[in-house]
Length: 114
Length: 115
Image (cartoon, rainbow over all chains, first blue to last red; front, side, top):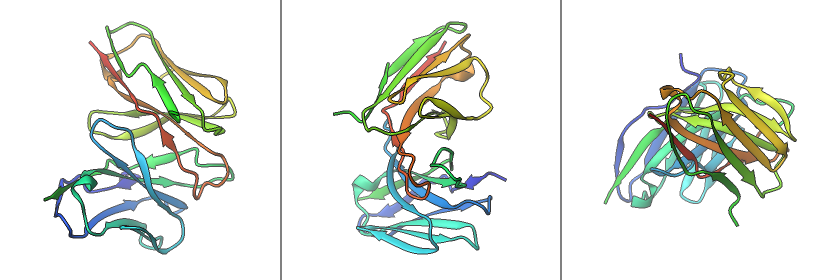
């Protein structure tokens, strides 16, 4: 079983609709979770982080975490063509230190159809 | 103004050669990383340094040797390059304050092609 699993996609969503990206993780001690966006040929950039169960909203983005189900998701409302990218889920087991070891999923490729 | 920079951006070389990639960050972060992203876009941690000290070495072949002369720089030297080393290598940095929220900032990547 992979440590962090995502559907590779591609996921196609009409412009203006809600895009829903999902991620499951295997290590129950994982404590913090991150969504990165990567445009083709570019480097990953952080969209959101979450570490408490429930929802966290930032503009058009909402991250949802359910530690009991070992599941984290990212919702993108009012999807725009500029949201077309690969979305990487990353999990940190946590430590007494920093974020020194993130484990990434293989990413979901999202395409917003105008 | 570039936060995390890497050189070179592209590297094409023959099998068996030795090459280096350099990384610098001007964010004042304590921790720096090397990641490898393969052709299937899987991003995997290779090394992590905190204040010039190695804290993570993810079972990377010892042909790969990172060096951190100071906390703003982390270089990667690769000996005896193999075809399987072809990938995009990303450098990243983050503060060392709170694992729950520390953001990793990635450099632009170095695309290594081994012929």
